[in-house]
Amino acid sequence: MKIDLHCHSTCSDGTYAPTEVIQRAHAAGINVLALTDHDTLAGIDEARDAASACDMQIINGVEISCEHTLSGGYGKNKSTNKIIHVLGLDFTDREKNACNVAATARQSSHSWSTYRRKIE
Ligand SMILES: [Zn+2]
Image (cartoon, rainbow, N blue to C red; front, side, top):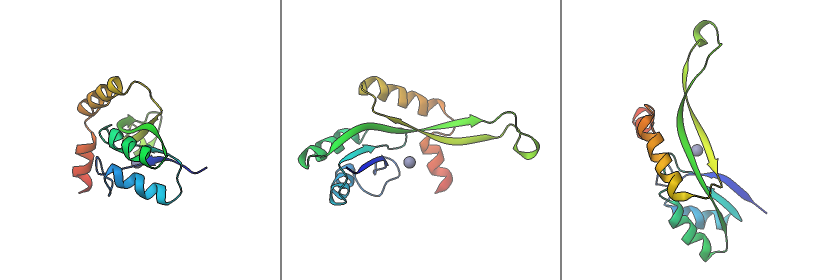
């Protein structure tokens, strides 16, 4: 069994739409996939529909952008803020989690949209 628990679609910074992600994963022999777009659950329904057509299993996923303040460092690394991405997998209450993801992205000074602007 092949499993991929970290995939992005055009709903964040991926190259392919959710349906195409599923089709390409299926062609590569993936059986179980988690679509983990940055700070959004927007592609999961489309991915799930595409997966049902080819007998793949979808696991709910998201990659949340967070700002992490390191403490206890020394020298130039003391109290450095870092942007980290945390994967959330296999949550069950999608509506509640969609609200939480949106609220987290709004609160973060390094939300995905801000991060994307920095790298573009
Ligand atoms: Zn990622």
